[in-house]
Length: 232
Image (cartoon, rainbow, N blue to C red):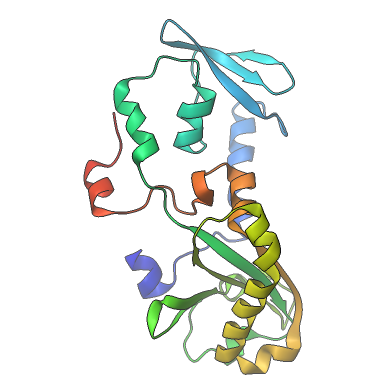
């Protein structure tokens, strides 16, 4: 968090997908096999030992070791729902996830770098209080290959509470417009150069990650949870 505030954080060269591609290349290079669009419904356990996983289409993949890299709540409540879990793990349902975020992606047909007073990759803009803020990220300022010449990509986001699908269907357009207007209050010269915008809601994040309440940063970094960290 300190690093993000002081220097704006970091981006992998080529965008986030390049990091995923690097993992994939390494994994395949070491003899791994990747199954895409294969939803896992259960981690199978026999006598407290993992025996494999079951997929939504009915396929069973045997394995002595299973690594679950999804939300811990989903792992223990759904994937391991038929296993005998230690009582200490019940505490997961009482732990607080981090807040979710509303994100707006912009493509602008001008150079945002020319408008920046300082050489930075992010702006944390707050007016009056933390509840009236907007974070602006500029990935293509860090990596020019992420946008065409004399154009830039912009990511606007801020923490928001988790609401149901109906709420976001009703308010997504208005909130998107609000984010864009706040961005234009910082960069008014960009108004006529917005070529594209796309927004992502907490419901979208939940559907894509299965993180409880569309959490954007894992567990909430409260003092109590940081001190005890994770049940073992």
